[in-house]
Image (cartoon, rainbow, N blue to C red):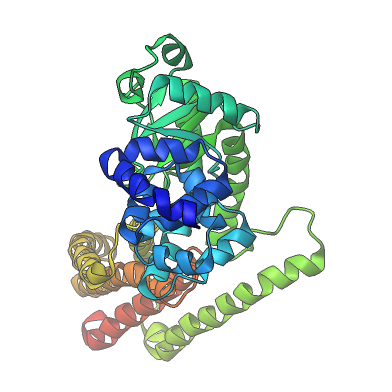
Length: 436
């Protein structure tokens, strides 16, 4: 302790004058010694140093510090950086840091770490090598040699700035031929191919295959490097994701396989089949309410599937757009109502146009202008509510903690069937004297 206090002013002066240099020195030290130095620094200065270190080393370093220091320092780090730190730690070490994070920061970190199903964020690895842009060539070469002894990956090395923004990628030949005092920023290739962490696995696999890369850096919306994705992992992810997406959309568990036991399959399917049965009876109940008018004007039965089917298609379009927005996190909480009303307006416009076309077709086919009017009005109402429902259902499921992909299509179809039947047959009752 006395020695540390004696040299502390010099350490602080060094950090103030050359932050990047201080970070390089720390990275060359043993982790326990580096953690001891870090804990001796004033809080704000320690934060600056941590954010300058390689993210993997920073995570290992924080894991070695005392709980009191850890609690103090995590309160001063932004959620994005903390999320990156947690990604580089094993589960048991991650929990040690998590206990010092709470409130809004914890919620933000949870959102950052919960990558959408089917995205490369779910399957990327945080096992990559990066250097600060001010790092000198001879320091980087020494570090690579040191890391190679620990079997760290060395196929690609990335260059980042003080806030972990990706600057470029190192070509090992250029690094070996560079002047020892040359900075990595002047050596690295800056025109670099990256993949966003929300990119679909299939899309990422196609992009890597097209360029014949076996790995690529994964970044967030602010170009922070989060990890890398390897081609062989993508191939496996594509195979798993394709079947899971299909199964989840239609109420089948993504865990179910072709030769799963009958008991397991029943357990995973029966719940949603029963939900679907209940909703089907609800739609049938609406039709039963209008049994008299259908018996009186049997031609109405011909147009029931037309109105309901178009509503289902329009709702599916809205559902697809909103689901993509949820997956890509393009829908902030404050704009959800705006999106719902936008989809409702779009549904009303589509309903007006499609309703007019349907009305004309019904009139020409059956020779009854009022049948055309009833069909057109039913179509307008159904498409309006289809747009609203297609946006509302996934947003509501997300809000209450359910997976929006899990059988949203079943719920939407039921809604459009019920509203379509009710609107069409309701207008038929209103205009029945002109339809007979």
